[in-house]
Every structure is written in C-alpha cells, then in structure tokens.
Length: 130
Ligand SMILES: C[S@@+](CC[C@H](N)C(=O)[O-])C[C@H]1O[C@@H](n2cnc3c(N)ncnc32)[C@H](O)[C@@H]1O
Image (cartoon, rainbow, N blue to C red; front, top):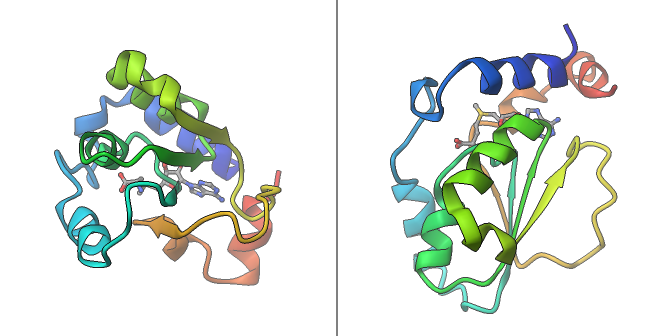
C-alpha cells in the first residue's frame, strides 16, 4: 500500500481522537512557538499536520499566516470541518512534503510532529513518492 493510501485509510476509518498520536492540544508545540517569540504575523507551516488541533490553537493565539500541509485529504477535511468558517483563513496543501513546490524562504516557522521519523531512509523516501 502506498503511503498516501495508508494515511487516507487511517483518517477515513478512525475518528481524530482515536489515533495513537492524538492530543487535545499540542501543548509542547505551542509552548515552543510562544517561547521563540514568534510574532503573530509570522508565516507558520505545520508539515504533516494531519488533523492536529495545533492550527486551531495558533488561530486562537492570534496567528494569522498559517499553512497546513498533509498527504491526506481526509485529514485536512477533518481539520477544516472542525474549524468551520475559521478554516478559510488557513492555507491547506494536500501534498507530499518531499515533492511539494513550496516557495523558498517563505516560512518563518516550520513545524513537524511525528512525521519526519517516517522518512529516514532512501527506501522510505522512495516509498513516499507516488
Ligand atoms: C502520526 S501523524 C501526525 C499528525 C500531526 N502532526 C499530529 O501531531 O497530530 C503523521 C502525519 O504525517 C502525514 N504524512 C506522512 N508522510 C507524509 C508526507 N510524505 N508528506 C506529507 N505528509 C505526510 C500523514 O498523513 C499524517 O497526517
């Protein structure tokens, strides 16, 4: 099974709070971003953000320049549905981070939780490609 199919299946068959990596709030990530004195105008990307609530809490903390990138359309749909009308103020990218055409030097903060440890060898990098 290709990685995209795997992740689509996960997010299509389990509720967001049923996955092992679920956090009601991404407390440590929020703390790290706050402690770094990141201004509210900063451009922040959550790579492999899935259905994480980090984006909800960043919006609640006044951050307005947010991007969530994930391989899974189902994950992004879950997050968008949860956010309701606030979803419109976030940039959503359904993409493979290995191949995504992200503009250079456009992000002040690059956040990844529980994503890059899947991409640790040539074999897994190749497998992530469609
Ligand atoms: C364990 S989940 C963590 C999700 C989120 N970061 C969190 O903390 O809840 C791993 C996430 O990485 C995404 N992912 C895996 N490989 C990816 C890739 N090559 N490009 C983009 N996203 C990927 C999956 O779709 C999934 O949402």
